[in-house]
Amino acid sequence: MPARQLALRTYIFSHDEFYKLDQSEQHFLVRLALISDDLRHLHHLMLHARLAMKRAANDIEKVLALHQLMFALRIYYGTLNEAWEVIRTGWFATKLSKGLGKALPHRAQKALQALKRYFEHDNLASRVRNALAFHFPDKPIKDALSCRSAAKEDGFVAGANLANIFYMFAENVRVRAMLIKAGVRDMNNLQKVRSGVWRLYDEGLIISDHFTAFANAVMVEIVKKLNARVETFSTGSVTDFTSLAPILFVDSESIRKIDNVARG
Image 1 (cartoon, rainbow, N blue to C red):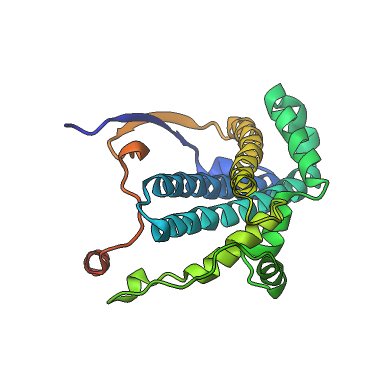
Image 2: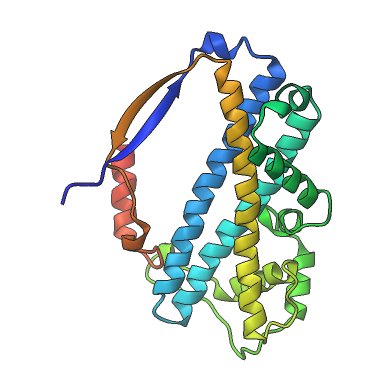
């Protein structure tokens, strides 16, 4: 069966036009684009992890899949927190907000206000970013260890190669640390634990949607100044998540083959 073709557009502008922008505008455009690209890929990782959780065949695979989801969520929240820093320093702290703010569509302005309300107060994104996204401090681990689960045993997985080592006991602690940040304290209440996991998933997506609505609108307004031309193209490199095999345990020989191809 031929690969599905996806129609896309490329916006092309000259470097000369880009450097005509005010420096603050140049910097903001690049920073906004970088955060947008990272959030896009992290969302794909989250979807892939959800698929792995659905297809896990035993308790060990479920923990491994949950680790993948929590890994993506930790970095997702850390990146969302940095996204707000980009807006705070590159939009509100410069003349851009006054110059372009009124030109943004109503949806983008509402999204920006929602982001401001969220980040002006204690929030899940900041809590996860400061304690767990890019850091390994003692405090959240200590808190998690004080909230013991009903399980009587724990352990880790090893095999004939390093590719499949997985430290379940540590990930079980970190999952509890994440759930504590989401307001869950009773780790033996399965309903509350599930609600905590879904809060972590859903809240991040809501904040990301606000950021995307704002970022896309700003991109449109700035790119208008660049006299960009639009070209269309199609690609067959289209992933169908419903038919994608989750990554749980891997064939180490396949890793070596890929590494050899990449270095060849």
